[in-house]
Image 1 (cartoon, rainbow, N blue to C red):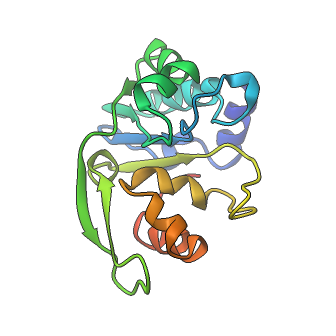
Image 2: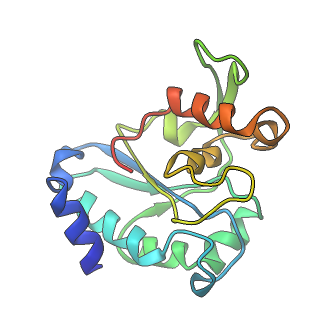
Image 3: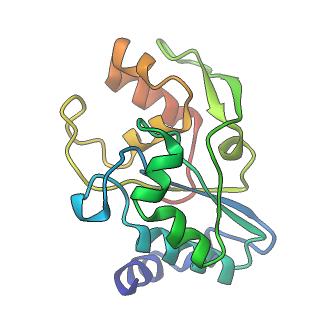
Length: 176
């Protein structure tokens, strides 16, 4: 919590990104049915601290969502993110509603079904876990946005690196 607060304060504070009445969506990595000790997902206390900061900045609602590789109803619990988010007043939503978008200028990912919560947010905060990926090596925060699309397998079948770049040309988080 202390480190997350220091980082956010170091970039100007949460009110630089979140205004009173904003609907905020926090998109952590909740992809894998792994415990916090295994380090595969975003740490639940980072998510909880971000929710508290968003609420303090005046957010009307803070939603936590991901479209994980493992079943969402299991990963949300095993990771500790559901409990941590709800404990501080966050709303944890399942990845059930998607909307098709057209990605202008894309060479491969010309369209995608994207989580409605992400598309309808006033503010999107992308919170990946720092780790190496066998197929993409280091993507900083960009690869985490694969978790906003319905068919992440398309990325793996059709030039993973290009698809990651193209979804990031469409989805623009306010904070990573």
